[in-house]
Length: 167
Ligand SMILES: [Zn+2]
Image 1 (tube, rainbow, N blue to C red):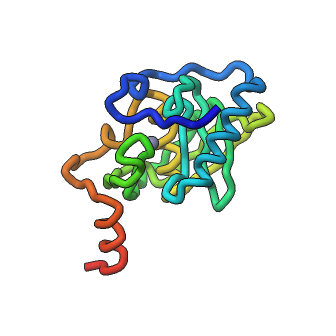
Image 2 (tube, rainbow, N blue to C red):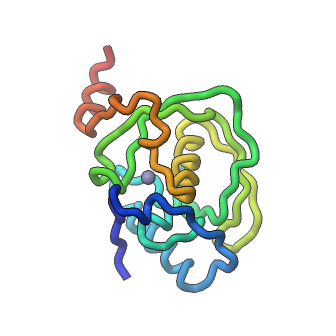
């Protein structure tokens, strides 16, 4: 099985994903392949089931250098404080188009890990955005749907310049 990323415009990205009732052999295998894919693409930090044709509430994300599997993630706390980050998506221009998105800066997520064990984790800043971005995919939303100013889009090259030469 190889990973095929579904691109924006495909209606499978706008559908709500189903809860995972059992993390079986096939899903486990798929999650490992998603992680392998993420590790092989240098601008990829997360990937959702729906982006690879598996309409299940499951994603993989790189947190502090380690790839984790999040099954049925649910946000149980959102801070009132907001933060903005430049987000990209593998389903949009191979992750090379970034949009400025505002989201709660801190969240607490309840989920099941790859052993289907219940866990609770807190995320801040970039990681808070990352998890919210992936959970949005499970509800059929992309970061573009969260942008207040849709005109604020940058390519990877623009972003490089912005950070190299901040005005
Ligand atoms: Zn995405």
